[in-house]
Length: 44
Image (cartoon, rainbow, N blue to C red; front, side, top):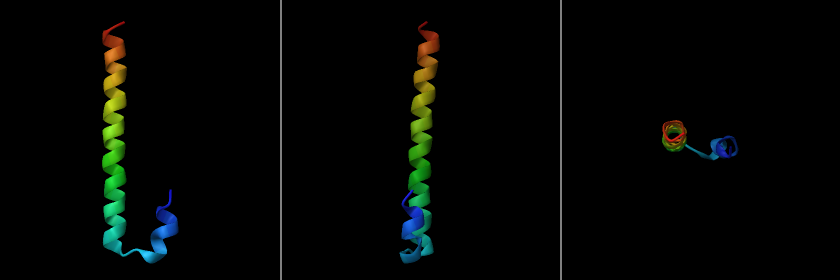
């Protein structure tokens, strides 16, 4: 994670934005993984 390196130069708002972006990304990725797993199970 590059967040730690950038902390010194960032304002709180920028950090929050960065975290939110990562969170959204993770949620999306998890949803897709979950969908693939479900799909496999259904089509066995």
